[in-house]
Image 1 (cartoon, one colour):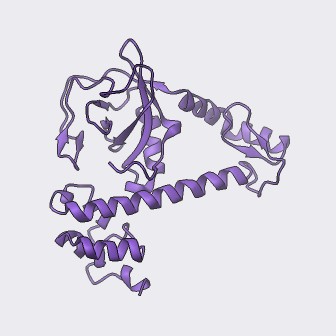
Image 2 (cartoon, rainbow, N blue to C red):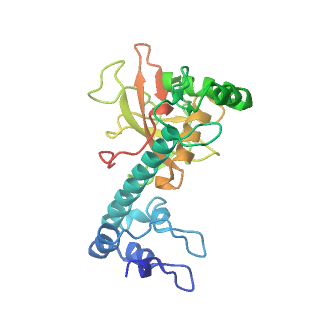
Length: 257
């Protein structure tokens, strides 16, 4: 029965496509919670159940959208955990499994090696550049204040709200300098929309501005929402400048907004 859940009809639809369209919460729970049906199967129009729930259709399917997004978050969390374990257990250069005496890069503390020979080879083959980017990502990237333009592309579909100029500030209840969680969404065309759970902090990162490429790269790694959304942390200093931390990107169970 589990295999039949993801069998496509002549138009490429699976059972979950139909469930989203009629907003049947009971069937969505049966397919996703009980049998782990896929939210990523695309029909002939290249639309998956997940894409239906992140591109405006969720306004008509509010109950099912919550369940679909929750399933996507679980899968994204599992995927990131698996990738992290793979990185920690594999030599970044020769790809062999590491034993107990793995040698970690002392600069970025992100990749590990069998020995110094592999470390030196990886440094020459590209890690020298990558290491610098990883260190910058972990320290955080100071963003430019967004323009006052209100681009229609920067929109939160779940709440049907567009970017509002003037919300480039600390969220309610967050102190200056404290890190808080933001959701980032968008694509390579830009701009990227950034907002916290309360929506009292909501701004954009424009294309070619500091942080755009680094945040976009982390979004593309996270397939929870087909590489178009993820979570990470940010903070505001006393001057009102925002720093975003791409290295903290990822989906967690508690991120249900």
